[in-house]
Image (cartoon, rainbow, N blue to C red; front, side):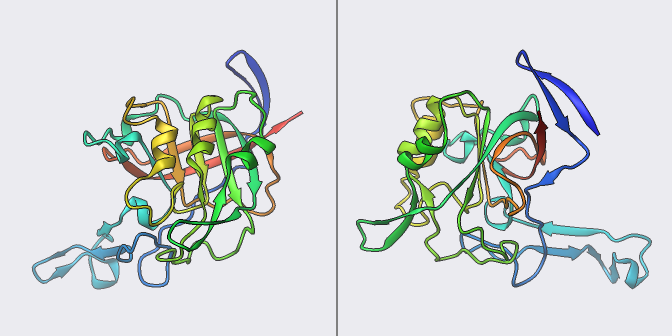
Length: 254
């Protein structure tokens, strides 16, 4: 399905018939995606007295409780409430869900950290080398190598790649509103609670920026080339600093 869309005074032809889902699925049990040392996702039937609410146990419906941590269990979108004591809820943040976006692929550089570990870092220079200052509302960052098995990876204690705070500050300066990455965080796993890249992107605490979001733990398939897209950013209407989300790309046609 090809649609002509006008957005911010520009016209685009969009292929709505071939959505590209960037989200990773949530599964219950061991051996599934997790970060930040959270326990596995649990999906358990409601039990009332001697009655278990599953169809296999004779109930008319399956009726389950779900125990999930949005930051640690899968693709999620955060608001500045991730840093703010007021916990600005991400679920009520967006007033629209379609944005112009660009997909870029970068191989993190090795840098020696003050604690002696070798980090994998997306630097300001790398970001500036692949992007000009032309306005785009969203940036989707695919880190290389784009290893398979991201829906089962245990990121805990692995010192994943992260972004320099100068890089996220620059993205803010050129107007990026929504930053999406395939990493557990834009910041280092162990940074003493500094969260410099988060702070720089939201310019917090100087401002409480309710116009920007960060989405983490997504996956950009290998078959998706770098370039411009239309992004649909759908997220659960949770009144929390983060919520499970489903970012979807649509190709822009000539």
